[in-house]
Image (cartoon, rainbow, N blue to C red):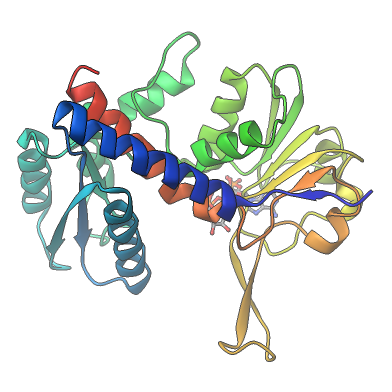
Length: 293
Ligand code: NDP
């Protein structure tokens, strides 16, 4: 069997096109312009790139973006003060504090200062807490995990009743993905660095989500024939033939696993493009909620 390739780039582009229309309609019909504030502390080059991309994509769909940059030595009070200001600004419907923050800052306290109504990254402890509880709905779901579910939904993969195995239990990906799959009535197993005999566990999966940050760890014989494989991993491996001297690979050995799975996401071009698409979706949803729509 050769797997269907799940094209995250195309799916993200479709979401962006839908959002562009929705934002236009919101403006014309209700005079509402969704606004997203990005907060960048310090000069981490990867963070600068991510924030730039988020602002560019926001502009493309018609979301107004508000950029705030604080120096690397900004104090806890300065960052939290800015967050409180943004909480109070009615033109802003989403607040994104780019992580990681410089070490001297208390990340947990900064995230907790964001109003849960504007927590478009979905990392506020109340939103995560609601995600973890049966019968409760968070106002926002973290973007990469939401993107994983959206990819499954838009590929027509049924989740209910399936065996889902998630590799990784981080706060950003593994744990929230597991909780979302559980909300959708999958039977979920979460694996981590202390799990014994990983291949035996992953071979049970109808849906396998890999988020470990280990290049090409998941091999063909780790996967049940016909499984759907979502690869969240983004890893650099040396490649002297590449212009930059490296290339990006996922946590899954794509060439091996595509021969076994029924569907698989590539890296790059799978989960990656979905993260910003879900951030924009959350921002538009927030603007609608604030307007009572
Ligand atoms: P973390 O390093 O925070 O978490 C990795 C998880 O994998 C941990 O739970 C760890 O276990 C587990 N793990 C590590 N090594 C092994 C192993 N050998 N066997 C079993 N489990 C293992 O990573 P993140 O969750 O932040 O990211 C995971 C991957 O996803 C990375 O490649 C990252 O670049 C990518 N990513 C992609 C995004 C996107 O596409 N938009 C967004 C975010 C992340 P333990 O808990 O026991 O330590």
